Image (cartoon, rainbow, N blue to C red; front, side, top):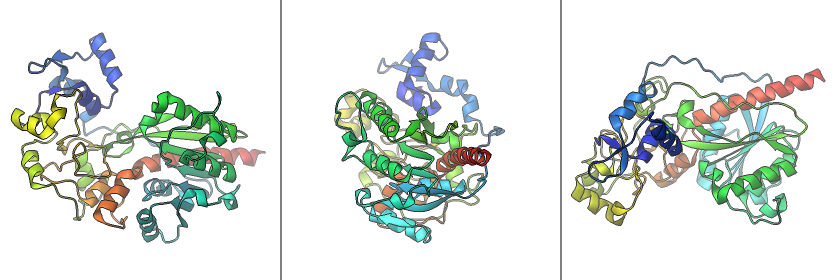
Length: 412
């Protein structure tokens, strides 16, 4: 295994930003060195792992709990529901889904198969009117895609976002008027269009009567998910409600790939057998040479150059290429296709991508949650999902808020 880590690799390994690592370098807390071969500034793997030994420990005593029980029945309307990762998580937190909208027919079939009692509204969100749920739903949730807006003047209003899926999310919130709405998105929304897209969303929610809680990016590894995935959470609270929303507290214990696929604290049995994608023989011959927790830089130089082509000479760590995950680390963020170049997530012991059920485990779906469609469709549904355990922890925060709101109403 490579004894040096690039800035990107060190950042990914310990879950700290590159800017934090650069600051630590300036302060002498974690010093970079020049790699003998390339003369790049790199970190000694041993030094990083020693400094962050607590991060890798397995015997941490957990003192955090976000669990809270609903004091009455709370209901959710979910938009852009996908295969149900967030919905199942919210269900585990005690929230009841009254309806879910999703355009992908295979994801809709997945939802219906697993929860026949759920009302699945299949089709383009633009074609649905949700006013029947006005004042009847406690929370509207949705993972709308990140799209640029057309700006009109200095302040962006709802009309300016027409044609985007965030417009539809805001339209539904306006129609339904829930006490709280929750949007989720990729971390990249923070910097999209230099932050203007996010500011536009906040401006629109403000226009329709919602104050936005300071936005946070939640790291899934802090919420009992064995995967380095991040989701931006956008919380809107109706302006007539003067209550604080608390994001879920991060847990101390970090779960690894072994916890996902073997019997242990997260699952009461090892992962069931299932179908999965395969690598072409040419890729198998290359990945056979990569050790656990290794990637393309661990290949012989001649093979590195051939495998990477022109990108060999470009900057950046490109840590996802020819990547074999280790048993004792969380998995890298899963993508919609497990075998494409740039997104290899190779099994620790076998030279193959993770199977469908392994994918689902890494996203903390229960084993009895079945996915419809072809193998490619199933991977896509799982790769796009919010990890179930992360959804559950966000669900606890929603329940706590609604309990407080309910208590306040009783006092009036």
